[in-house]
Image (cartoon, rainbow, N blue to C red; front, side, top):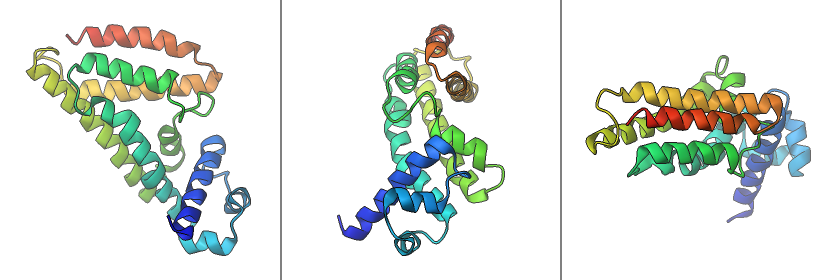
Length: 196
């Protein structure tokens, strides 16, 4: 990896950590520069604006993480009911990338940025669309195999799973506690079993 590539990756990783903890709008370029120990010139060599850096964080940090932790667990699902539960349980209780007190980085950026920045909105919408479509595909394959009832509407279930995850993630963030996750997971399992 070249020095320039390494510098760019360091900026993105450190900026992501700051933004995840503090929020996008309250994290300044000067703070990112101080944390990464790069010069302003180096920062602006890699990113024309803070928003360019923010989009790069979505594309190069969040997208690969979502692909690995949110999409792959159900992409080739043999048993979607179990895989949906295991995925959400892992995201809430075990994933080292996600911290209860800071919530979901994609959810945070969506709430903070999507309403006033079109580029952020489009990049975030693409991530969510990909996750939603993966869930829809897993449901439809499960229906073909007889694992999920034919009367279940895959689109509705996928929206319910996504909104439930983001909702309980925010509840945990608000309380800085994972206790609610256990209660949610019990009800989530019951919901999933009703799809059979």
